[in-house]
Length: 194
Image (tube, rainbow, N blue to C red; front, top):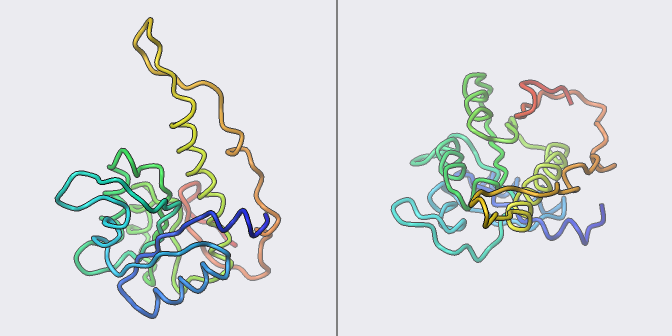
């Protein structure tokens, strides 16, 4: 995939640790993503146009993926995940959770709650290369919702026509497996060796 195409992807990185936020920002920028960083779940909701105590607002920044730390004061990464997935306007944005703690029950809860991946810290460049398919999937869900919903006037029902071919995109050649082995958790399988 060319760099020009990748720069259209915008990632919202959420972590209360300044050091971890700077690390994830640098790795994302190295991977040619646009990045916005915030230090809390409530600030992430503001960037997404969703306030904790108010109705959704128009979101001026298009975010294609949220990557968030699990353990944060106030609102955890899991709480942020739930708020995003409960919002009709944000539910198609892929969410990735990261944590330095390898707690299987926490990992399963996040994946069952809608997280696309669960990364163990420290996050590495090879981990971030796995984000692109989730972003493409999220974008194709958005476009399918916007472009292919047809309301039938005779029956008053809603149906979707056609399928978006982007969901069939093969994994990019940049995603070739590394020679090292590392545990990764994703919603498609409970444990992946990379």
